[in-house]
Amino acid sequence: MAPLGTIDPDDIVATATALTAITVADVCREFGVDRLVASGGGVDNPALMERLGAELPNVVIATIDDYGIPAGAKEAYLFALIGFLTVHELPGSVASATGAAEPAVLGCLLPGRNGFPTITRRTSPPTRLIVT
Image 1 (tube, rainbow, N blue to C red):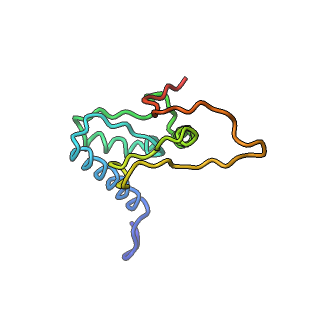
Image 2: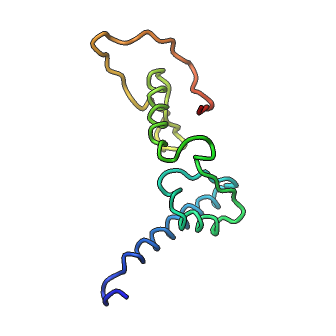
Image 3: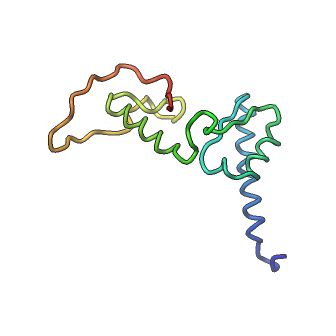
């Protein structure tokens, strides 16, 4: 038991884990989510995943790994997508999700020593990502 006036580190971790699960579950319930795809480091936390399942008994909980993207590579895939959109001068944000006034391109390109390569720009964003 921790001395009076201190908090056991295990209690802090347990509280943060519970708070995370409850916060995610509250938002899922608010928006009527019936499938939750978890990603990031939390998918490796069995206490968090178990608590999410307990909080959301009627929600199918999957991980990004179930869709072919390793949780540890999520950011790499995201940055590749943002780069693709930037090269094609397509917005990488959605105003309704970010609160921004309008969609925006999320990066910029700077020419290298030989300028820019010639590409055929897309006029619409991709609608799916196929991971092979």
